[in-house]
Length: 280
Image (cartoon, rainbow, N blue to C red; front, side, top):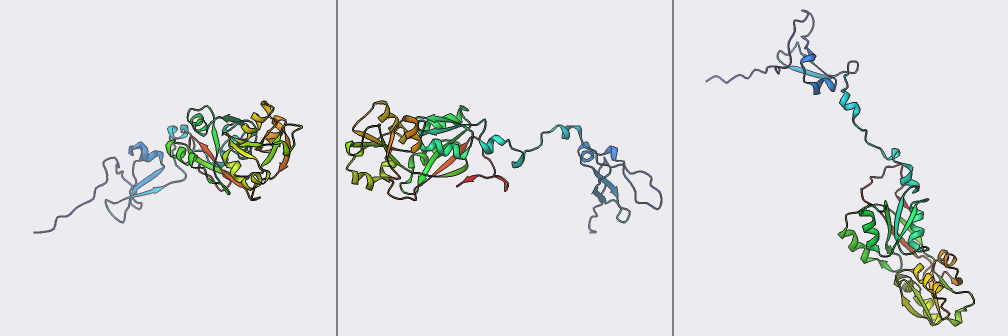
C-alpha cells in the first residue's frame, strides 16, 4: 500500500495573487487576521518551496494598532516616584511613641516621611493592610538580643511584603528628671530588649529593672510622672523630646549594638540595580 502523501496548503486567509513570472508569489496582507497585521508580520509564498509559507518581520510597513498605543506602559524602577526613595508623601508606621528607635529607623529608611506611631507591632501591620499608612518599619533582630520572634509570627500571619531593610546602630542612655542624680535612682524603666542589652551596666549601678512597651515610652512615663527615684533607658532623642537629663551615655554592654529593621509594604517591589533597597 502506497504511503499517504500529505500536502501542505496555505491557510485560507492567505490569498495567492498573480505575481510577475520572475518574482516569488506575494500575498494579500489585507486578508490577514488583524493580530498579524498589528505585529507587522509579512507573509509570502516561497518560490523555491511550493505551498510553504514564509513569515518575516518588517520595519518599514509596521502597522501599530490604536489599541496597543492606548495600553499603559509598565513602569521601570527608575520611573517610580521619588516618594518611594526619599519617603516624601509617605506615611510610615512604627511601634512605639515619639522618640523611639523605630521612629529613627523609619526616618532613616524613608527620609522626609511622616512617621506614624503605633502602640503594638500588630497595629502597624494592620495599619498598612487597611491603607491607613503606606509602609511599616519594624525591628526583626538585634546583634545582642537576637531575633524578635513576635514579628516573625506576624510576618506569617499577615500578607505584607518585605521591600527592604535598614540597619540602625543603637546607643542607649540612662536618663532621669532634672535634679535627679544617678545615686538617687532605685529602678530603671525600659523595653525588655534594651534592659537585656544593658544588663551588666545596670547591675553595676544596682538598679531594679522594670519592663515597659518601648524605650521612648519609658522616658515619657518618667517625665510625665516626675519620678525622682526612677530613670529610663532610651535614646538621646527621647531625652530631648521629654526634657530629661542624660546621666550616662552608651551604657549598652557591647558597643557593636545594631538592630535590623524590615521595610514592609502591601505590594512587592522588585529592586533594580539603580535603586537602593538596603540601608546600612
